[in-house]
Amino acid sequence: MSELRQDRTTGARVIVAPERGHRPRQPAAPAPSPAPGFDPACPFCPGNEGELPGIIAEAPSAAAPGWRVRVVPNKHPALRPLPPEEAAPADATLPGHGFHEVVIESPRHDAALADLSDGEIATVLSVYHDRFVALAGRPRIRAVVLFRNHGAAAGASLAHPHAQLLALPTMPPGVQSQIDWAERRFRERGNCPVCDELARERDDARRIVEERRHFAALVPFAATCPFETWLVPKRHQASFAEIDADELAELGPFLRDALRRLRRVLGEVPYNFFVDPLGPAETGQPHLHWRLRILPGLVRPGGFELATGLAINPSRPEEDAEALRGADGGS
Ligand SMILES: [Zn+2]
Ligand SMILES: [Zn+2]
Image (cartoon, rainbow, N blue to C red; front, top):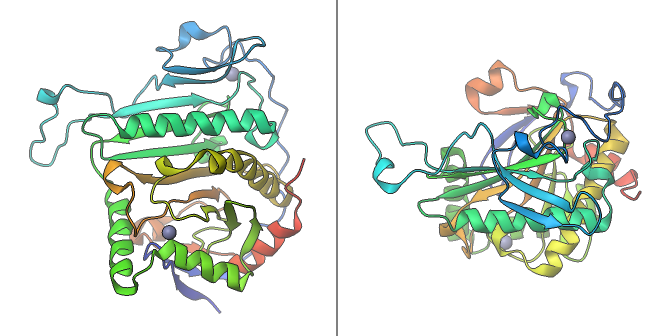
């Protein structure tokens, strides 16, 4: 029987309908052919710097090509910084002020996050964090979105491993409604809804995939798609900007291992992940608690989902968590 579940941390509703057809558990077809370690046509590969609009930051490396992770401006930015006099809103239009950056996660064209070493993935996460904090501190920025598209079907236009950050002059309505929900819930119950949910999930255990010292990985109660996975910090913290050094060091390998589990269960599938998009005003709030959410792209949203904003999940979160628990996250 299908159920309409509500996410207690965002208020969003999801239709869990396992009998709606085949559960996408079969590993997808293997990747067509292995990508080369270097692609002469790729702007993110070492040696092709002439194709880049610039370099914002680098994590240096003693070995060639001299960097491990690099931050560059997006060549076709959705938003760009504007001087204040050009950024005044008019009627229904807000000028496109903002920042759009790309984090090139490895000099290797064929590197996969799921295969990086502890040191490599730690560098990636610390660059994510540095840029998240830097962009949140820019003038007239209201929200920073850190996201990653993996695979053409998930919206990645370049194969070279990369993530993106978009800093927006306005809070997206979908995120604002989640913030409002969390604030109401906090007022009614006196607790952070994510802290509450995490305690409930750890008690129940059916949807927990793995726990480490600072983070838990779980399939949320109202998962919006098959194998949706959240990495949740155990210590209350509103924004990714507030993560401490020990937590950040644990998160890199934890994220990599979560991606490995997905690959073991599903094969090579497209996925998106993102951290909850928040801004400077949300830092330190008692009702907000960020997560990193991984969404495998097994089902595409159709007309119903687009019309209503309601997701239909053909998979039961408890069974997905069980499959992920059974898959080794190690190398
Ligand atoms: Zn490349
Ligand atoms: Zn909390």
